[in-house]
Image 1: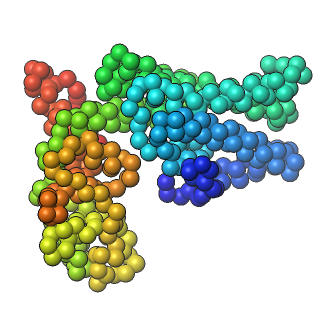
Image 2 (image 1 turned 120 degrees about the vertical axis):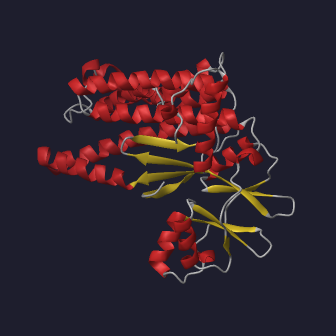
Image 3 (image 1 turned 180 degrees about the vertical axis):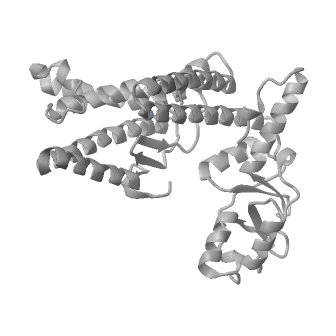
Length: 374
Ligand SMILES: [Zn+2]
C-alpha cells in the first residue's frame, strides 16, 4: 500500500503503518494537550498505541490461522480505521475461511479476558464502558476497547470478519459464489441500517455505511469472477488485438500509441515477438515527467509480468493477478511469442457480457448492469 512505512517483519509478515496513522496520533496528542496538559497528551498517545497493538495482535490471529492451512500473509497494514491483513490467497474450504475469520476477534476475547482476570474485582462494568473518558482506569478502558473490537468485527457484513464468517457458514450449504452473493446482500442491508441510524445519531456511521456497501459489492463481484473463471480458458477472453512497443522504442512513441488506442498497458517485445515487459500508462507519465520524451521504454516498463498459455484455465491467471497485483498477465504460445493479454478492464468486460447473455438464456435479466461493472 502506498504512503505506508515498514515497522519490521515478524514471522514472514511485514507490519506497515499508514502515514495517516501518524497524523492521527499527532491529532490525539494536541487535542488531549489542550484538554489536560502534557501528561494527558502523552497518556492519550499511549492509550492509542495500546489499542493499535491489540489491532495488530488481532491481525496476527488471522495470519497464524491462515498459516495452519499453508497460506502466507505477506503484510499487515495499520490504518486509522483499523488493521488489514493481506493473505496471499483465499482459503479453499468454508471451514478454513471460518477459522481464519474468527481467529482475529478471538485474540481480542483473550486479551479482554486476561485484563479482566488481572484487574479482578477492583473494577466495575461501568468503568469498562468509559472508553473515551481519560479519567477512567487505563486497563479497564483497554478491556472495553477489546470488547468493542469483538462486537464490531462480528457484524455480519463485508469487510468485517463477521461477513466472512457468515459467508463461510452459508458455503456449507450453498455454492461459494452464491454464498458470497447472499452474504453481500445481508451486509448491504446492514449498511442501509447504519446509514439511516447515521442520519439521526452520528454522521460517522454514514461513512461506515458507504464503506461497507462498496465492500459488499466488490466482494460479490470478485466471487462472480472466480466462479466464471473456473470454466473459461485464457484464449476465450484474452485481448488479441493490441499495440505493442519494441525494446528500442522511446516514450515519445509510447505516448503516440496511448493517444491512438484505448489501451492502458503496452507490452514491450523483442525482435522475435517475445515479451520483455509491460509499460503502464501511469509509469509512462511518471517517466515522461522525470526523463522526457527521449527516454527508452525499457527503463520504465515492469518486467515482473507473469506469463500463461492460451489453453490454461482463466482461474489461475486470476489468482496470479490478485496475489501479485500486476497490471496484466501476458499470454504466450509454445514458441514464447506474445499472443494475448489479460487485463483488469478486460475481465470486467467479460463479466458484463456474461451477465447479459445469462439473462437472455433465462428469459430475463437476472442482474442489473450496475452490479457487474468494475
Ligand atoms: Zn479481523
